[in-house]
Length: 533
Image (tube, rainbow, N blue to C red):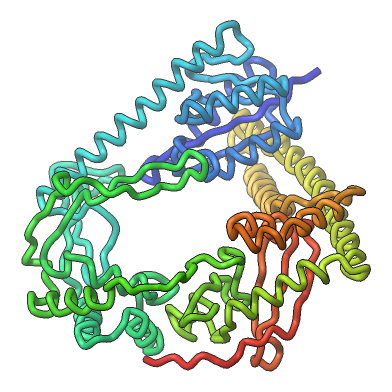
């Protein structure tokens, strides 16, 4: 029986060569040929760190295919390509060993089928993590040196343009002078906008009013989505505009569950502060006026028993823009419309929190499992199950065709290597067509493998399970908001609010955990909001 092999290749930086993938794959392919293995699957991740797992699409697809049993052996150039996170590496090894699969390193000699592989993997995992720590420290030292020297240490900042600093004595990979650093220089056009933002704030305009005005006038923002309240506030508090650059205010720690980088404030003694009069856009007087205005508006207000979280917090979504529905002017409204105006989202309807909660709770407790709703529940689950089955069938057929094209491409390449391209010019055309066909099939495969949200099979006790959850809701509503929220989230995943046909009322679509759609109509939005710019 022929051993089915798969190859996984990865490089971590966008400054590395893309041919790194080709080099790794060639090394892995050479090992497979030497062992008589048939390479049927290939996976790759370009310019993605090995310190993360969820953010690597090629890696995640490889894990899914391993679970599906599409290959017997996974070949990597070395274990660091698989992961530089020691815990993730061990988890992957355990998954593969449990499934009876094998991981082999082409360059480092690792083999999960060999005796003592755990010790070897443990040592390499520690070395990989130490490499990341060392790289992080070196990067930080380099950034600290740039900050002290007065160079840019981060992304672009609105109001300035980057100026490359080149070393004429050194060349990059393309023979051009090597860029050793970047400095900032005032961009006159953007600086005028920054000055206007500060001037409006000094006159008492709120961040929201400034953002709406700039968006309505079509003034370009640092981000494609337009100016936002948070963006204006960040501008007004950035001391660079005042001619003072601060580095190392925060450090970032990766959350091991979400893999997101979370900020952590550093001690003030660790900050590096540098006077930069050449970057000053805002005068001392204007800066101070804005400081006083913001301090006055941020004075804590007394809220008599006000609860900042409400029953459906985090579950309400605008049906027009996909943004969140949250508290706007003491009611619930689209946050995108409130922060960025109608240029970003036209849904300006708002609704009292009490009205929305009362209507949604009525539906949850009394209308959710009517005979008609149960019929729709069954129909929706059956539809999604059919869709999932069809996608699996389509994906299997496409993978078979891709595998056939891989064989054809390999044969053509071998023929070209043997005969020479000049003697067989038609082979080049055949190779181009085969590659194009393969790319087209891979795009089709990506479409068929869009993950379907966890489709719940129609089990006999499914409806009973949801009814038991809702039966516990009334008591939770009286005593524990958090528990009530968790009970609702056990039944409902998302609630979309959008204007009805004539735009006078909000209607809601409640997405259940069972993937049925319960449509609610006639939720009154009171009145259209009147924005003041």
